[in-house]
Amino acid sequence: MKVVWENIKTYSDIKFELYRGVAKITINRPNVYNAFRPETNMQMLEAIDVCRERNDIDIVVFTGEGDKAFCSGGDQNVKGSGGYIGKDGVPRLNVLDLHKKIREIPKPVIAMVNGYAIGGGHVLHVVCDLTIASDNAIFGQTGPKVGSFDGGFGSSYLARHVGQKKASYLSRMVGQKKAREIWFLCEQYSAKEALDMGMVNKVVPLKDLENTVLEWCSIMQKRSPLALRMIKRSLNAELDGQHGLMQLAGDATLLYYLTEEAQEGKTAFLEKRNPDFKKYPKFP
Ligand code: 2NE
Image (cartoon, rainbow, N blue to C red; front, top):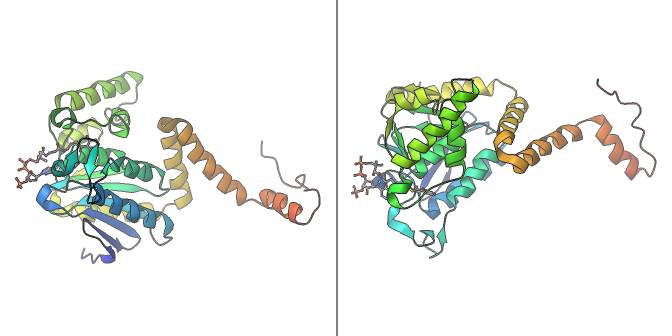
């Protein structure tokens, strides 16, 4: 399939493109295996906000430029004592803001892993809703080797990933064990091993990666966007505590606003009369 991506906006560190309702955000720093610096994250934050707002964008795909790396995490060249230092001289860890936005955007987000997903790059794929990887992909954490760690989604959500193919309570405990192994040892894992662990959804040859991702997108684009949104919110809520419940409840409010019953409350207020809620059905 010949795919021609249309540029949405030009940035220094990322490519931001669109094809048939699929927005692709490509970290474009191949010389450092697509490591991110604060500017990279600022640009991804802006791009994902655009994806959230635009009605013609159904799905977001993250990937890395070239065939070597999806993302190798924080750029060690700009790591200072308080975080990663951008051109403004301010140390930041703003990739965590990106993680929050990936969780919150009410649309599916896919990691298209085309090589190394290492360190913060591994966390980035973990946080995405789905991961499709090429068979040359390599997964792993490096934090405790290079003086860092991510105890957020990169640990807790990872622990929920691994072993997810098995349903029993005990297998989820294996998830915790494996997540600790991944973080404590900082070893690397092949795409096949990642698939077996339940960390990725599908592994394909590199040449088929983008088409496979687009095929999955075209299937999801036939599904009800609101149903996908509610599923994402519900699955997030289990891990995200009060914040997740707030997001799910926000969508419940959205659905309520769409009802005539909710409209009656507002209309009655504006018409300075008592609302008549009795006429609406109560479902058992
Ligand atoms: C990715 C990996 C395993 C690849 O190894 P290899 O041997 O295939 O390639 P090489 O030669 O190491 O890397 C190719 C070029 O990319 C640069 C390298 O310095 C090298 O540059 P040149 O020598 O050709 O000029 N490069 C790769 N990763 C980089 C990085 N992260 N920052 C700057 N330059 C990088 C191997 O390269 C590797 O292990 N990379 C480091 C991965 C890493 O430790 N990332 C940071 C983890 S901490 C983090 O991301 C983080 C967090 O823990 C919490 C919050 C936020 C971020």
